[in-house]
Length: 56
Image (cartoon, rainbow, N blue to C red):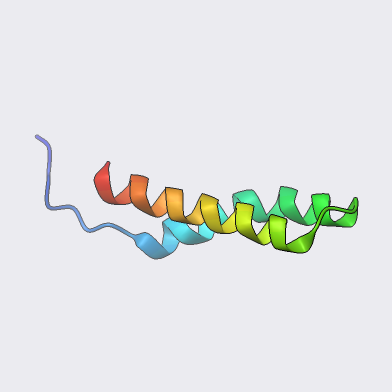
């Protein structure tokens, strides 16, 4: 019933998280936020998505 040997798609998870966090971060930079903070938030979102994808 459950296939535990499914192939994980880390690239799709990275792109999805990057787009999801990158768009609001881009908007925040246009409003005056530090770009390094925006990159950090986007990187954290990608890292968290990869960890969740790996263990879920």
